[in-house]
Image 1 (cartoon, rainbow, N blue to C red):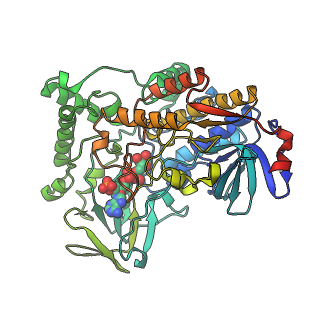
Image 2 (cartoon, rainbow, N blue to C red):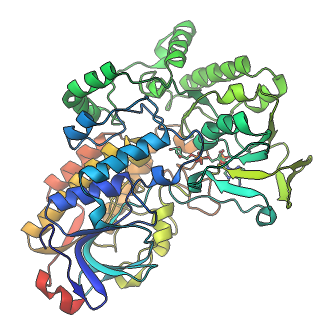
Image 3 (cartoon, protein in one colour):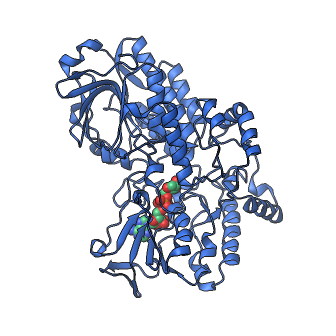
Length: 555
Ligand code: NA7
């Protein structure tokens, strides 16, 4: 290994590193810091012009942290960041999260090893060299023993292929590719497609300014009050004082949040008691509904129905127009699509300048230059906002499409199923590690903490290779198969796979169906630690065939 701060060597037109990281978002930033601390030479490539990943791209109006939010959506690897950073709100707005990440980059001098505006267009494994070679659109070539794919679980925009959409001549924006310049809705007739987290956050904000908003809804959604609150200096002081204990709590919690575990089951209570609890949680807002409510909502149809009915009643109570309220009634199991927190979403339908269109009743037929045409009519519009989500979890890996042993592409390897072991490695792709990939808790876990925990494991695995003179680590097909069955086996105890969602791949036409996330919560970290303790059970290693200094010759 080369030592930290030692300049990478450049032989001809290729640069050499111990590790290349793709992505400078929350995961890639910690990957860089951690591997550099280990003494590795590291290079990060990112297509954006600065750090932040998801938080750099998703600048749409209303974009906020949801989940338990600030100050616990943060790095935990050092107390320093908690000591010096002040959060203003529990559901921080996107600019505040981005500012935090920029501060982290400054604090740890990350940018010196990140090459921005540099899109990796090819990543290829070289068997003879036991190394990866990446090529960027700007013509940079780099070789590294390790390839860390921190490419984002929600980064590859889903752009719907609707007849005529390219003919529409007004402004068109996807929420995940929002412009950096201010977008004005003033005096405009805006159509929004999509009522997931992004649409539900954006619609109330757009409606405040636009002349008219037409919401084109395919699936009605349950949404819960965000319960955004100011974080006072006293709150911050308390959070700082307790951070050590809080971190322990986060590590112990199945979702990585500082919440006490409990054993409450909805069906152990009377309907009145259940309702009283739901009312209390509705008032409090935030993800506490899921984390601190009842444990059987995602496993028992009856428990699920009790919460679904409660939310439907709330919607009926908020939305004044009866026909609109009925269009907003969700009919899937609550929580089996990504839970959504809102800031006045349902109230928005009480405004005169908002129209809801139910695409199940009147599907979109086409766009014209100036309108969207459904089965029942034509809506003239000046602007189109696509809140249509992402090719989630596996999409960004497939977009990268690395080529492993024998030139096999990931697209070929993943044609039928997202084969992986421990949600981090893939047979045929030695020394490649995914962060928040399919088969990991990923989006079901506090993501900065999850990235830290995966990367700490990866770092130890790299140490293991070095200590044993090994050149590569690779999952066996048997361990991949068993892991895939474990992931789907755990999911099958829940209602999650029974609803079409981006968790199951149902939002992308032609994508293999299957529940992609490991739902065992923090059990995952126990599982991966056990694998390491058993000498990396399920992996095979190859002896290192070249000393470090040979690399210039072989690359
Ligand atoms: P989501 O949750 O995937 O939501 C996308 C929405 O767009 C959802 O309502 C979809 O309906 C709808 N959609 C997608 N394609 C179409 C087409 N072709 N026609 C009509 N409607 C469509 O993405 P978000 O960005 O809101 O949230 C993703 C995550 O980002 C979120 O969980 C946070 O972590 C941040 P569907 O439900 O598929 O019928």
